[in-house]
Amino acid sequence: MTAQHVPVLLTRVVELIGVGVEAARDAGLTPVVVDGTLGMGGHAEAVLTAFDDVHLVGIDRDLQAIDIAAKRLAPFADRIDIVHAVDDELPEVLDDLGISEISAILLDLGVSSLQLDEDERGFSYSRPAPLDMRMDRTQELTAEKVLATYSESELRRILREYGEEKLAGKIAKIIVTDRVDTPWETSDQLAAMLSRVIPQTKKKSHPAKRTFQALRIEVNDELGVLRTALPAALEALHIGGVAVIESYQSLEDTIVKKTFRAATTSSAPPDLPVVPEEHQPWLTEIIRGAEMADEQEAETNPRAASVRLRAVQKIREARS
Image (cartoon, rainbow, N blue to C red):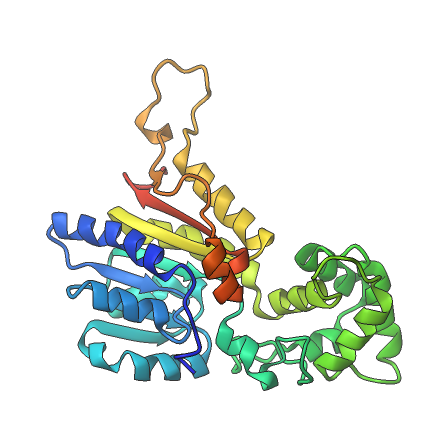
């Protein structure tokens, strides 16, 4: 399975993390890198191979992924800590490990290849499976429970906000009406309804894509976790440390972009002749804007086609 998984923008990600590693070395610190979306360990393995003095903390909410990554990273066992947690628990994770600051953090956002490829996880609309969609299978909320218990207005909201679905109202009404007689239990059942309701267009996107994205985000609170985790990660960086973020859809990329912009620009009024220290930027962009995968990588690795890579470096402590 690990052989089938190709980490997105692997070489570039390792290069960017290296900026934080070098800053730690220059400061006489042991470089600590957090892979906040460990997955099957592809990025982590490359980082540990490239930098023989790095201590890596791997975090993932998916126990199946952790099991795979732990086996893959066994040769580096003396330089890793693998933790079952959600990214917004980063401060607690670091505190438990006795780590006060980090040199780099990587967040490879969204659903993983492992989760998409395992039919029983229910993330894919192209194959029949239970409507699960949990990244952490120890939690209670599933997509099936969302469809069975949420009100029409709640369903309409998540479809509109998280799926950017124009027909959110119509879809929500059908879900609530039809579940009275037939519960929504499988991915192919839901996808078939969406294919009937949503007009086919010339675009390649499947009619079910936006609804499945919305359900997945709701089940896993992906945007809420990111809004909490990203500021905490930036706060944990030492001076010279870097944050490297890979986003795959506009909602998560917008959160990253706004968070970075707020910290890389002055908070002072534009007409001030001298910007006080407390209003000066405390992060600087390593990548101007966002980078994308080249055509060759996008063709060979479909997941890379939509990636937006952003990276910043901490240049002073955060503004109070």
